[in-house]
Length: 256
Image (cartoon, rainbow, N blue to C red; front, side, top):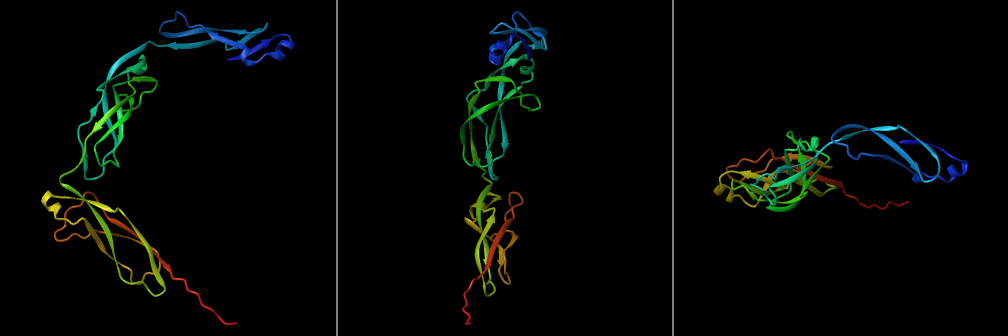
């Protein structure tokens, strides 16, 4: 609201914005759309005009209702792991707010990211009110706002996680040396019958990576080598190996 104040100059010189109060009286107004007069008062003798002189107010009834609690997994667990049925400290919570907002709420969701989870968890999670399409509904209050979620996570019996290492062979040309190498992923997931998985070694090599004729950094994608009959991989898992090679430095003294 903008206000225009008319008063003696001495009054205007001392007047500050905190000395002016504009009120809108909503007493005894029910639900619906209302046009309310604005009244302005100053702490000193002055004539005050407001712009605008009225405001439109929409009032709604406060609605409270119970909604169910749901689990929303934003990221699945690592390959080879699975989760069971969740257990909530509260199966239902109370949602309150304007009736137009509360009527949209169908559930309160606890969202979890399991992308790095290998073990069962018990976590305090903040709830989010959602509508039928799963969109968040704002301007509502949830009570309780946080609940405890217990979720069992276990390794699948038909999947095994196995470490891998690059099989780097061969000699570099004179004057060059291998400084380091890195690779991703460092483990793969293999699936099959449980007795066949138990026969796998703890670490598997990649296909041979030759250094012959190399004089600089290079990157290569290689498959994993299985002993005997190969087992299916869980997903398209190719090992990307980055090899770092530098030229050796030497010192030579020249006369004159």
